[in-house]
Length: 92
Image (cartoon, one colour):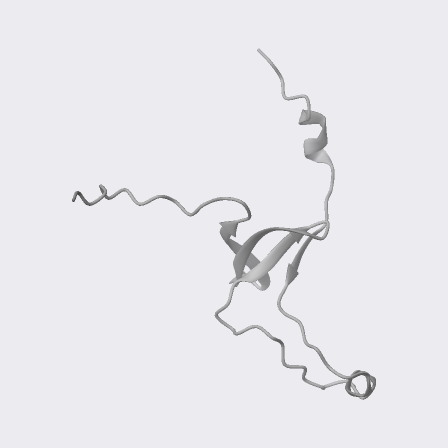
């Protein structure tokens, strides 16, 4: 039985973060921000959000509500192809 040589790393804490979007705005507008200011972001409400570990994107997902907290549903993992169709290929 061979154990995974990186098994000891599995309990290391990493920072998972979610990027909802961003905004490009002049400094004068940033300096004018106050409580109750609203900043429109560059993402639509139905677009997937980026999920990163220690600043590196690993997945994309959607924001959901679980109980009284925000949560994430993973939709795409970075570097993974979508699941292949089970239908047989068309024949010529």
